[in-house]
Length: 377
Length: 117
Image (cartoon, rainbow over all chains, first blue to last red; front, side):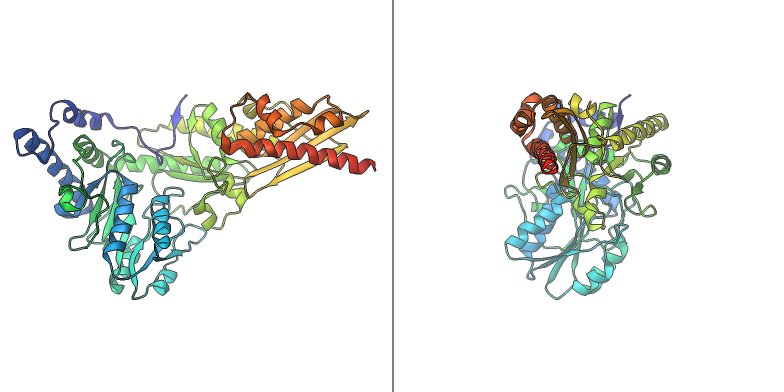
């Protein structure tokens, strides 16, 4: 049996999405900037797609900028604001995606001051610390919405309010939460928000950045006047069309189904001795399960499961250059050993109960096997 | 890969002649090697490893290499031998796993020699 439980990494492109994209490769291939009918036809598809994404966020049409994906959106938002603003302080958290963290570190090298907020053991950012750290020089607060590793959903309502009261811009990376958690940028006071298509059964290489009207942003990619003069480059029309199609596919019943399977998987895996759920159970993405298995190393567990046809990911860093385990789990106060023994299972609406049962059975047997090898007790 | 998934030499040796423990939880690899020596020869060798597949495979390969060797021969086993035994295709980032194997064996031999004195 093959079971894909790594939907936090990327997802299968839905057949409806592929069908929607198809004509834009072969028949409707015009450049959306061209004035002739080939161009007008793709311009219409671009506009319609933008409307779909804008509507999902309760944003305006002109506030959606298509990009090459989540990382570009994060870079554009943070560097864009940093280079266009007077102040020099940015506040983010210790559990951001590398696209945010590394962008902030690069800005630190250029002289910006960046503060990294702590999180509690459940993975929630320290809001009091945020309030204390904001100064007149603060230009941007960037906090991830749904965490990619542990699935914790941050209180962006509260963070948005604090930013508004202090006149500071608020960016959130909503790559994992988009379509799974309702987002209303007007109700929540979000100024910038990053999206990606391939995490929601859309194609890779396309994403978007929501930029609230009136915000001054320096652009990253210079060239033509595409995307309201914020992002140059001939528009990826098949990508844009696929992204918009994918954004409208996830239904409430799919979310309910994922929550049911998620909670079942958590319940069954926690029956194994010396296991621990990482991240809050209450404010959690509908498809995320992150568990530490004591005395075993995550990459070993991952490859054993791979051998059984099961795809998951790990917070262990044996394959990364630093050998340091997940920065997210470490920020949540886990020991090195526990962080190295963590596995992330991320579901999709396509997963079935039988698959989850198979995974539970295999995890039980592999963990037992690895604990026999382990010198730790 | 087979050595990582289905290692043959897992375990501990009661009344081991020497024990070598290396690594730490920080980097995610902890390796324990147990040797039984008779007439200056390693007649049995077992390991226990907390670590990735490459670390487990390195431990198992080390056991295969050291079994039946004299102490002098075993001292000469290096991480390069371990990599060679595993077929040579160890990714650069996993080289340290084979180094751990070499260190664990040398520590076990040291432990054995210090006990004899």
